[in-house]
Length: 339
Image 1 (cartoon, rainbow, N blue to C red):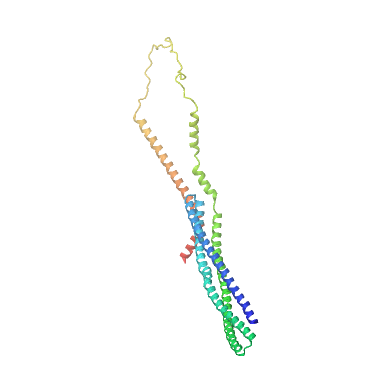
Image 2 (cartoon, rainbow, N blue to C red):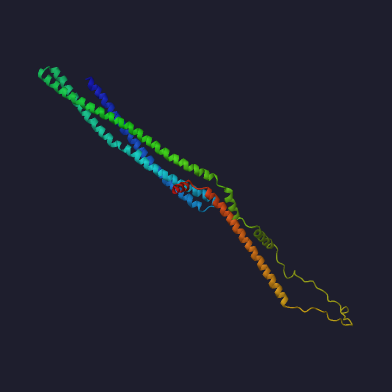
């Protein structure tokens, strides 16, 4: 009877082990599968953010445009690492946990078989007790033989079940250790790569000079001083009313007296006025116009050269940070191409 009671407690311990494994392994599987799906959704949202950053960068001035484009490239690269994280979580974590559904079913079937053998032994022991109460010698010997057979079957099934439960527990411990070690390793790989990329991106964003973009924006929207002066002068002239015809009166000059207008008695010789050559003013005018045209052309050439120099300097200012400030993704691709 003591062996029967010990096997009863043993059976309960085995059932508890299998039930706990079925419960918690199933919960781990569902939670980690949801974790993987959420990570995949986060990857999709980050891809959308990277595209929006790139589109916004195309509308901004050089400094902000370079930094945002680098940020979008690095963010897209981090999502590539996140995609690898999702695939590794699915293959190394979720799939092994799914396999525990079938493992638990087989172990539970073995446990039912062991429970059936134990129940058969209990029935034979109850029959032996009844036969002993009646004291028939032949029936008692037959019952003892049946009890021995039932006990041997129960002992054999008990050893098999013990070996099966011990193997199940060993496999469970090894699987739990490997699954969560792989989970931690996958997360460490992703976060280490993301930290490396984001560190480079952070330093890249710190080098952005907002004053350059602000100066370009100010020059683009400000109005020149001469234009402001002309507009203000025309506005001031509009405040003064135009004079009427009544106010515009010419001064009346009195005619000199006739007594003063007397011709001299002796006519004076005609003044010697040089004869005007009509070709000289035309030649002087053409020379002046030609000189003025040459001066204007020289000024235009100087302005074009100044504009070219300013454009060249601005291109150097714009391209300088671009060569110095590259995204981590661009440097990674360039290094692998050189290899």
